[in-house]
Image 1 (cartoon, rainbow, N blue to C red):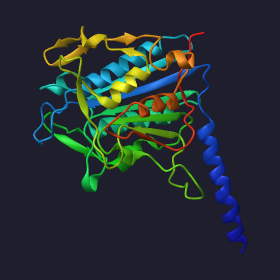
Image 2 (cartoon, rainbow, N blue to C red):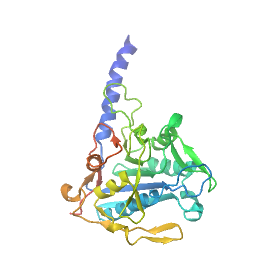
Image 3 (cartoon, one colour):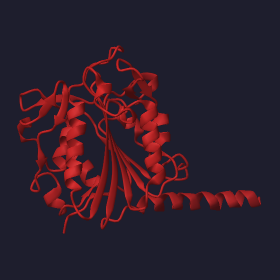
Image 4 (cartoon, rainbow, N blue to C red):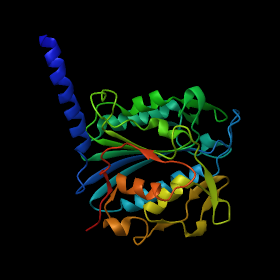
Length: 304
């Protein structure tokens, strides 16, 4: 009987601890972000996957937007670009940043381990998501340039689930990505809930995500990421000004404008919730998802 009483008391205390952890968000006075951008265009592969024309541009423009928004004495950012791009993808990134399962796992695990209390890990993925028995798994690079590997949902989440003092925000622009969104605790079923990880998906667990040509010049974007960029105040400048070396995008076109997106409405303080609501209110054809819980996580703070 005594053990039963301890169990009844212990589970609510665990629930309270989990919920309080979610509210221990980074201070908006001083932010440090580690941002990992993973994108694949599947140009050179032997597995029959469709080439995606906008994923690399999506990731590189979001990375450029983040770096510009973090150009602020109150903030610091370290970015990591993990790209499989073009006909000879391994020639364009360092060996440790080529987006294989092993490299992604190693990088994420190390950052999670070292996160401080006022630090964020932001992970962005643009690429194929899988359906069927491997619902939501990520199609990442294999060991050889013409191969892909399936990064299971369980293994991807495991790489993010180590003990940490910081918070993790994951944005997935891939099909069936809603399968990553956890149920916010409604009772004592919270033992599998990870309060330090906030997920935003481009689609529901049963829907695809889509690319579209913008500006009429082959300037492709995922429609979800296009709205994400607009939420940040990114001006694409009609896609004019991109620079390529062969089939590799080396300079994106665009910059942050302070009077667009949610910047002017939020006084420069951009939260996860603000971005998600901006996208959800404008996206058609697919259903973005996130946890039904606190989203007041500051990603950027105003300069003043």
